[in-house]
Amino acid sequence: MFDRYSIFSLARNALSSHQNWPRAWRNPAPRRRYAAIIVGGGGHGLATAYYLAREYGIRDVAVLERGLIGLGNSGRNTTIVRSNYLWDASAQLYEHSLKIWERLSREINYNVMFSQRGVLNLAHDAHGLRELRRRVEANRLNGIDSEILSTAQVQRQVPALNCAPDARYPILGASFQRRGGVARHDALVWGLARAVDALGIDIIQHCEVTAIRQAGGRIIGVDTSRGPIDARTVGVAVAGHSSVLAHMAGFRLPLQSHPLQAFVSEPIKPVLDTVVMSNTVHVYVSQSDKGELVVGAGMDGYKSYSQRGSFPIVEATVNALVELFPSFRRLKMLRQWAGIVDVAPDASPIISRTPVGGLYFNCGWGTGGFKATPGSGHVFAHLLATGEPHPLGEPFTLDRFVTGALVDEHGAAAVAH
Ligand code: FAD
Ligand code: PYC
Image 1 (cartoon, rainbow, N blue to C red):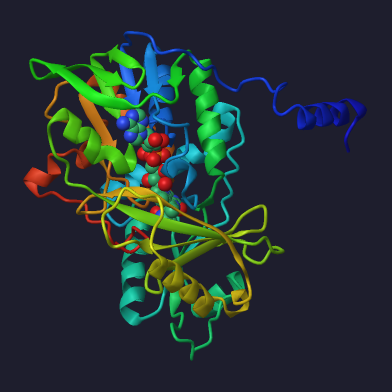
Image 2 (cartoon, rainbow, N blue to C red):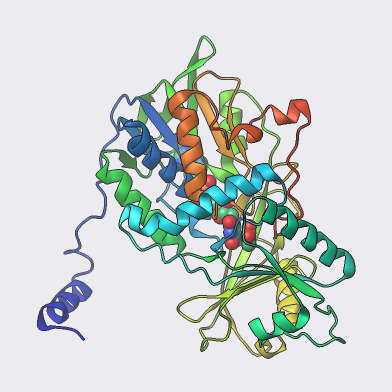
């Protein structure tokens, strides 16, 4: 029920063109010098800044964002959160993040709408089922909740799914992580921004880093569209633009940038209360609180910095969706968009020192970094604050591309690469 005050307040704010809305975070001008700079105002950059201040007391920090915070992949993803990765190193890193998700709304006093509705990964052939079983067993050894569901259990969980034995892609079973789910991506960004700002860190939007200044093999600052800024520690978290920033610093990263698309349908009544993913059929879907189906697909195969994506992916994805959910056939799709994802050869992230002293990169999260946002920020903040990798981040340094100790997570990536 609304009381009189809230009705007036609602009307005043609705009619004021946002004039009366208090700012959720400040809009400071950049200073000439900071102890540390974070480049990239997506979730990873903001989470890093948050933990730098909260855990290490480092508050003389600026987050530099070339556009508006959250308008990169952090605001373009399909919000799936899970930790069911195959290898110990990744399972532990993503589980670290999932545990933070479970307390994050309380921690930052902002509802990030984390909904643990479970994530299903479907198997359509014997090989796929074997792979899922292997991953489920590996997850359990790492203390991660993960189970195999039979076809009948899958059907009970998702009545709208076509589990008929004569389906084009028959469902032989699925893995299920009940603690997985979805969150509200813009709430994550806004909540982190508010928390970061309250800790005294400057979030500077419309401030593009255009050059990385170095002296004697170490970083001394960056040039930006709003002037030069000095700092002896710089952390870069720019996702699809990581190679561009590395080029500015004079080295190359083992990354490729590809468009990754998603769509939402017109809103419908509640029909799907879990996340369904199929790597074989190349589609995944969940239903948002507004009722829209949020649908995603495999990556576009070509390298590009255009946030658009190509039509063949739209066509293949919608076909796949209808194969799995025949009753969605008559739905209209409302919006389509793409983000630029930075993919490493082993489909695992890079959280690392670089050849330039004081310059650190957090990248390579590719198609799967939303779920990792708080954990990644926590681990990256440790690296920036101490100069040493966090124990959970150690397997993810650039060294692995020299030693060969790759962490191949293509099978768990959920999105076909
Ligand atoms: P971003 O949010 O992209 O932030 C980087 C920021 O850096 C941007 O705001 C950009 O403007 C800024 N920047 C770039 N260059 C500069 C510069 N020179 N100067 C200053 N700022 C700069 N992951 C999941 O776990 N689950 C999912 O369901 C999922 N679905 C996805 C669906 C789609 C369609 C896409 C595109 C991605 C999906 N992902 C998913 C991946 C996930 O979105 C990303 O891994 C994650 O959001 C990356 O966050 P970030 O903060 O590193 O990057
Ligand atoms: O990593 O779980 C994931 C994911 C789902 C959709 C895109 N990425």
